[in-house]
Length: 222
Image 1: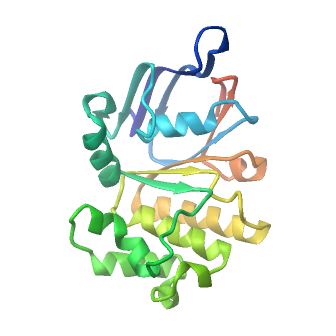
Image 2 (image 1 turned 180 degrees about the vertical axis):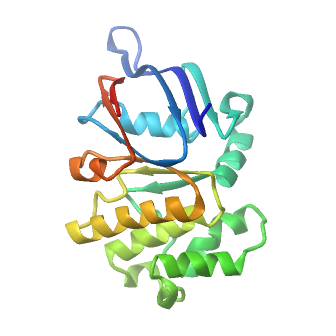
């Protein structure tokens, strides 16, 4: 059984004749490495990622992360589990403008009442070329730099799993290649499982494994 295990997942929106199955009976076993979830718009990519991260609850089926069935948790427990085990990276960087780069990176640790491993944080900053920007504020950074900060924040809790939902959607070609390369590097460096949603075929080809969705089902898994 993989780091992320899904069995017969179903997630629908709407009711009656208006019901749409965003996820329709998906089963997956995801191990260490860099994985891309791709497919056309409306195929269920983001919904599947949200189910993996406990951001949504499936109508049917099982989802396990690092051997833990997410259905055992209530909302508060699920938030704590997610904060300690899953790093989230979104297209919108969701940085706090009143906090500097260092404070944004360590915010999940502060929220959880955990001590900051300074050596580890600086290691992340070096890998992402952020060491000279730790005292700067988000508004002074480029789009690529802001996304690097969101990656560093996701890594700060030493999660087993990183889930990224189209993290390069707001970036130019050069920044996109850099961010994807950095994600692959951190995956190797910290022995993590990274699952990224993307519609970019070139990015998907950079992944160790590609999962193609269509109409809420897995069409190809290679």
